[in-house]
Image (cartoon, rainbow, N blue to C red; front, side, top):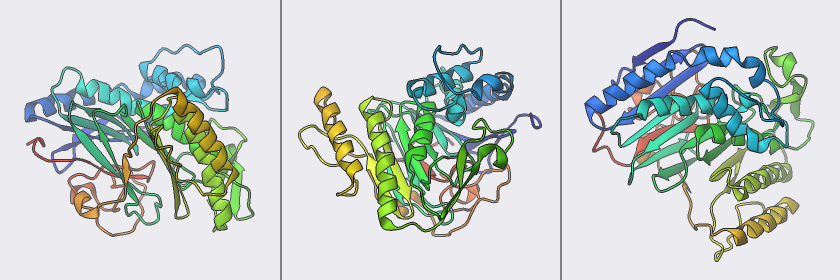
Length: 378
C-alpha cells in the first residue's frame, strides 16, 4: 500500500478528488449545496477504507473465476466476483472488475440518504452513475489517446438500465489480449461494464507481424495474467484485418447484449468503429458492421434470435460528438502519468474545463456533464 488515503476538493470547488495508491478518483454530485457537501463527506469516509480489504484478498482476486463460486469477505470483492461470474466460461479474474467495483462502492456511499439530482464516480475512466428520475448525463468518447479529441458522445438518462460505463483496450494501463484502441461499454453497474469491456477488447483481435505481444509477467511481475501473451504494440493494419478484428469483438458484445449483461458497446480500432446497441424487432436494423464479414452474419443471426425472445427498443445512446456543447478544445496531448487528475478529452488540467474529469487509467472517456446546469452545486 502506498501512502495515506487523500480526499480534497479540486480547485473548482465542485468536484472531489480521492487518491490512494493506484486508485485515483474524480467524483461529482449535483444538487443543493448542503446535500452535495454531505455526499462528499460520505464518499471520502468510505474511501479511507477501500484499499486494504482488496490487498487482504488479493490472492482470490488474481485467481481465474470458476465454479464453485468463491466466497469473499469484503463488499468490493463481492462486487468484483458478481461482475465476472457470468463470464466464467472464459479466462477472467475478478481483477477485471476492480476499478468499476471501487467506483460502484464509493458512489453507493456518496448517495446514501442524500437528495441529489445526479452524481458520478470516475475511477480512471470506469464510471459509476446515479440519476434521479428525469435526469441525464453525457460523456465524450476518445478512441485515440495520442490525440485526445472526442470521437463520439453517449447520453445516459434515468429511464435506461445503465448505471455504469467502462473502457478497455491495449493502450491503457491494464493489459489486453486484443488490439482494440478502445472498447467502451454501458451496463447496469461500473463493475459489470468493466468486466465486459475487458473481454470484448480481448476479442478484438487478429494476427499480423506488426502486432507485438509479450508474456504479461515479463511486462509486469505483479500481474494476474501470468505468462499469457498481452499486446504491447500495434502497427498500421490493412483495412480488411481492422474490419475482421472489430467484427469479432462486436460478436462477443452482441452475445453479451443478448444475455442481458450489457446495454451497448462502442469499439474502436485505427479510425474504424463498431456500435452494438439496442434495436427493435420490427426494425431488424443491422449492426454497424462491415457488410461482407462472416462475423457480421453470425452477429445478425444471434441478434435476431435474441430479439424474438425479448422486445428491444429502437434507439441509440451513441451520437457524433458535439464539441460546442461539451466545451472541449482541440489540443492533442497525453496525460503526464502523475497521480494528479487529468482530463480524458483535451489533455489539459481539470480546472480548465469545469466538467472535465480524470482519466488516468483509460483514455476512452472524455467529459461527463449534465444536460443542463440549473442545479449545479454552489
